[in-house]
Length: 240
Image (cartoon, rainbow, N blue to C red; front, top):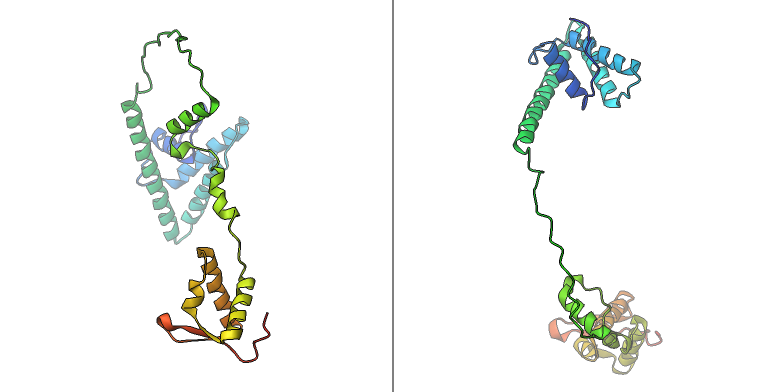
């Protein structure tokens, strides 16, 4: 094969360079003469380095790949070399087809980025509106126009009243309350304890307290359904 004598070009990647070499030297892409291709490819990479051009790592990686294929091709049994050559051939065919399609798409979209539009006419501002608005009125109008998704206003203070004014009941205090009631009655229906809850949070705390008492074996739970009862175990009267 003739030595490369063309001006060094910039390629998008090693596949682009290989396809260029195969086309230029009229090599058969379906039966790549790997020995000749390695010589041409490494010669080009060497010239890139001599011209002080930046050689990307992917070009050097492909050079190592080609040299390896060449090495195993010289062995008596070169089944691996055939597999590697077929793999390289398939990648080149796929790259070639993508490049052809990309060129066709580029031609089809030629001119899409060119638009012609008339220059907008200058509109004089209308200063006839004389009404004055309170800040709260303007804020309300903006909130209405922005919609719920774009609002970033803090919630009103009334929203926090139900949280701040409610008394928070701890699980520990509820445990003491249940044990105190069982000291006098000894056995109580679980439903009655839940019915005494004054809020949803109080009901949850009561439920957690019963679970904690049962876990610590302070109470005994019996029955089922609406007739579940809890009973203070012997020797637990002094539990605080």
